[in-house]
Length: 129
Image (cartoon, rainbow, N blue to C red; front, side):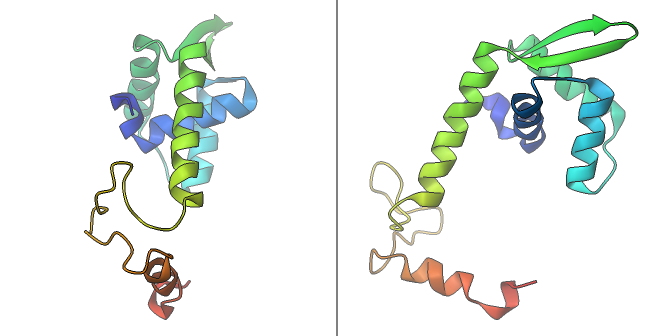
């Protein structure tokens, strides 16, 4: 995965633009703030936009006094690659092992190989809302 996707905000912003085609910066910021249910610092948000434009993942054009952003082909490809990778992790075979067969971060490659540990973890009452 490329470094620019290490940021959840960058991923989420790209997903918004994939969904909507293009958005004015303020509209994108407002949608993310609604999703996160918290205010985003404007300097940080516009820094994220600039970094994605400079990396070639977003296009920026001016419409009146507003900047409008859209995913580039490279941005869309990176987003779809990440989506596929994420889908493999979520819909995988439940073994919890990485592609090379090593144990995951916690060293638990699935004791039974059937996802039992993961299911037990999901069922823990202290994790429920």
